[in-house]
Amino acid sequence: MAYLIAATNFTDVSEHAVYYAAGLATMHHLELAILHSFEFPAMVSDMPLPASLIDDTRQDAETKINVLSDAVSATYTGLKVSHSVGYGSMVDAVERYSLDHGTPLLLILGNSNTTENASWFFSTLKAAALRLSQPVLAIPPEAALQAVRKICFAADTSHAFSTKVISTLADIATLLGCEIHVLNVQQHGIPREEVPELPVGLLSGLSGREAHYHVAYADDTDGAILQFCSENQVDMLAVLKGNYSFLENLLHKSHTKALSSTATIPLLILHDEPGI
Image (cartoon, rainbow, N blue to C red; front, side, top):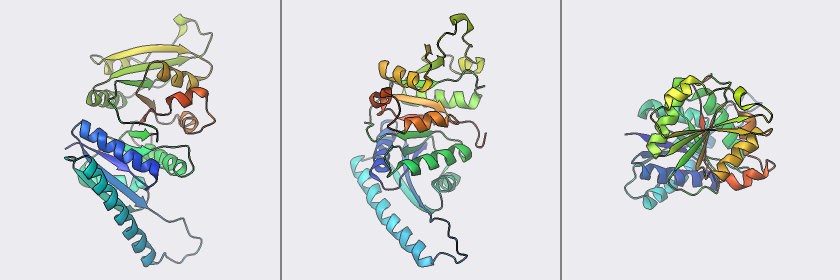
């Protein structure tokens, strides 16, 4: 059966994302796997880590994930929940779990601009974009679970979208039962007739779907995207991996005022084959 992976480092932000994932899985008749991984900073000495340290850390993590899994199961009765603790990075854990259980539909993380979670989230996101094929759904701490009615896909007309990216976006929209709003942001001053057309692959890949196309003119691309989401009651924002300046801005309080009004929107990160 299709399933979601929710990654946790046991912070409040990541556990909120786990519950969000559980609610999403319940709404759409999916299964949920909760994963935690742990690793230790690289040591200057050649001496190996004491086995007892690894065992004690694993036992502590197993206790925490059992408590979390039981609490999620009690909240969402009928949801099939599994969990796993592994040594290594979170991406290592996702890869190992996927080998045994198949590729999940989404990897779900909690994102935040607070110090307790931001570095873990962003390092995991970057590693996932390089090594994993499935999209990542980043859940802000303010995000409340609700039906997704509109996804905004921030489309870069200079990017040759692969069939895989578009089909993934379309499949997620079908699963959620929502509209897709494709937003093309252009610089001020460009005549309408000179606006680059959207790639044929994007248009053909979304044909037959409930898709809408928009052009916005702005010098601040990131701000324009966020403003569009706010003004059009968008429930989820989709971007392609590699646009890390935008992702970094999205995670920091110093970004535009528009961010404060859209901070509750989950962020869907799409990418082509790992490493591309």
